[in-house]
Length: 147
Image (cartoon, rainbow, N blue to C red; front, side):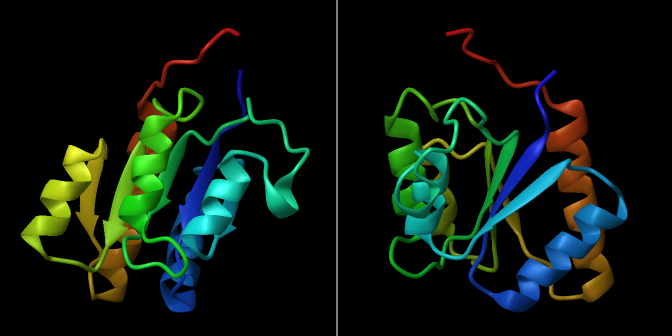
């Protein structure tokens, strides 16, 4: 059985802390990897830069991806993930403060599995993170390439 790793791509330290707190409170992931910009997320996934040598077959169970990121934004990251055979099937949940209909449409057009707006209220944020973790890390089953 593969270890359940979650990749959180988030540049806002407050949102990162809240998400980590909620996920750890409910012990939903064995490991949570945080990337603070789009390029760092791609480097992690494709074992480049500071992550060179990482086993690329150990992919996260789910990626929580913010849209507004430095270096490469979330849509650019999503487009790159869906274009590569290695990461094409990894579930990507857009977790963002954006309420822009164009962002939602573009996210789904590029292959996002879900689009969730970050709640402003602390308790609502914790509950949203718990539900996301429960579904994507416990209930959802993703395909694995046996190669």
